[in-house]
Image (cartoon, rainbow, N blue to C red; front, side):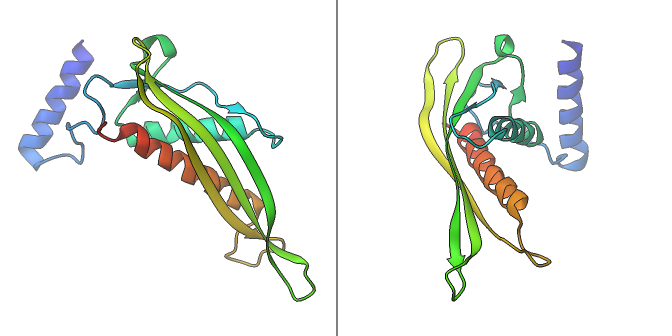
Length: 168
C-alpha cells in the first residue's frame, strides 16, 4: 500500500510543481480494468515462432504504453487472448520477365478481450491484419524479409493495443 501512496503522492507533486510530468491519471480504459494478462497466442499457421514473436511484441507494447499493468492471470482484471490464423509471403511485384522482385508478408490475428472475474466480453474475435513488403535483393534502405515480418507484427500489436486501451 505504501508504494501506491508514494506513486500517487509523486504524481500529485509533479502536477502541482511542473504542470504535469507527462503522465496522465486519466485512464483510457474502462474504470474497473487496471491490469491485464496476455497468454501466448496460438499459432495456427505453419510459420514457426509467430506465437512467441507476436505475444512478446504485444506485451512489450502494453508495458511501454503503461495504461494497463501486465500481470499474471490470477491478478488480472482482463485477459487478452488470441490466435494467429493466417500467414502469407507472396509475390507482390514482378520484373519484365515475370520474375518476382518484391514480396508481401501478411499476418492475420484474431483476438478477444474479456473481464477475468465475470467473463464479460469487452470485445470479441476481432481480426487484425498486419502487412509489409520487401524485395528479394534489397538495396540500402529497403526492407528484407525480417524487417517486413517485424513491421507486420508491429502493426498488429499497435492495433490490438489501441483496441485494448481505448475507452470502451
